[in-house]
Length: 122
Image (tube, rainbow, N blue to C red; front, side, top):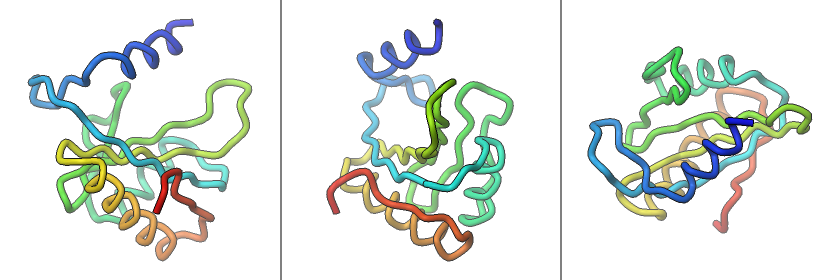
């Protein structure tokens, strides 16, 4: 019951940045159609981009990307079928988030056998 409320509040209010300052974030999502857990997906993303998982064992672990964006994993909620969503957030612009997402998608397709598609206009 708490999870949907947290998701709704997170979408309606501006995000609080990692530094604690209020900052808007733009998001571009890529969708993985392969079944994988959140922990495994975070580890694979971290290996593919050679960056560690930040804030592990919290509600919002993430992987920093080379261009200054970050990747977070959204797994299907209870009872929902896959796919797995990888949200790429940027504080610069939506275009920056989309470019970082496409770069991450290319790295993951090279590194894994995952079938991935962008969930935004290319």
